[in-house]
Amino acid sequence: MKDLHEGRMYWQETLPHPRTYPPLRESSDADAVVIGGGMSGAVVAYVLASAGLRTALAERGGVAAGSSLANTGLLQYCNDIMLSELIGQIGERDAVRFYRACAEAVQDLGAIASALPIDAEYRPASSLYCASTDQDVPKLKREYETLSRFGFDVEYWEPEQIGARFPFRKPGAIVTHGDAQINPYRFVHAVVDEAAARFGLQVHEQTDVIAHETDDDGTHILRTAAGPELRAKHVVYAVGYEPEELRGRLIRSAMDRSSVIVTPPQRDLSPWYGRYMIWETDRPYLYARLTDDGRVIAGGFDEPYGQPLAGRNARDRVSDKLSKRILELFPSFDARPDYEWNATFAQSRDNLPFIGEDPKWPRVYYCLGYGGNGTVYSMIGAGLLRALILGRKHPLASIVGLDRPSLQPN
Image (cartoon, rainbow, N blue to C red; front, top):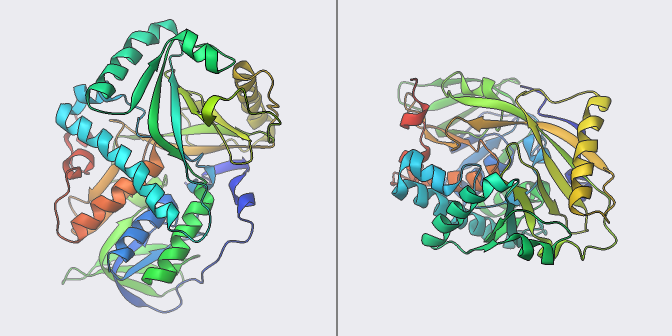
């Protein structure tokens, strides 16, 4: 899928002159090659290079020019599937382990951001997870009790507590502490730049890998459209939401479309308590956050169609709906869209990412953060793949691996 998003994007205007890198002009060798220069590829390449592996990153377009442009930068340890539901799906031990890994990943992203030479706008934040209807309250309370029981920093707010802090009321809400938000475009560029400067990461933009073969000795040979080859012991596909790269090996994922607007900076942010990130139990759900300069980023109205809306009129209809939802929550805000876009995203059948070694292809790995928590999954994937490449075990390998039972045909 070539077109990952359509519309007027916001993030690149916060870094108008990013560093660029030349394409691969001569064949070279590496310990590991990461294919994909978005969030997953950047974080994986950074972690592998910082571990002392000779690492190359190959991106067929530009760094952070694909799905990262459409990323809304919410970093949350709660997932599209509630912990209480995930326990029912994969068992208590693995579900809690996965949620704790998500919480740790939020902090790990902050640690990387703090070491970068530019401000990636990583900001610790709390989230307000609202019940959309009265019928959702029992499952929301059950989720609060589950999160609390396993030590997550959460509160439960009744409608009166919500109304005392915000200009709206909801039937109930979980407040999760320990989340964060980030500028994904600045972060990806800064991570790649820092890995290149500090750890010797080879970065090749405009480098399209068109063939992948394996020698008799197990060396992977990646041939590019321009001719030069990359040879490596290990190859990581971090290709975002582009299923043609997967060669039909990964199944059980659906390609959907989500829409986003970004408003002008608000004059008065006092109605937005604590700059909390907001989302809801309804599916598809609305989500909203504030930028550093007081803009509202709101997204939702997900649709089961992978292709982005190219027509302005069609996008305007969805943007108008998002504007109205913002005004329902914050009547005093200027909810006109300064920026609007819609983008493709993928969702796995079991609501977990695809991270691990290809069961049929030794030393070929995938880091695919499918779902609404892709940046957090990228951080988890980087640590997991580093462990596998270095010959170590990882506690999440069987949970998110490509041979897990929930990915097998029925």
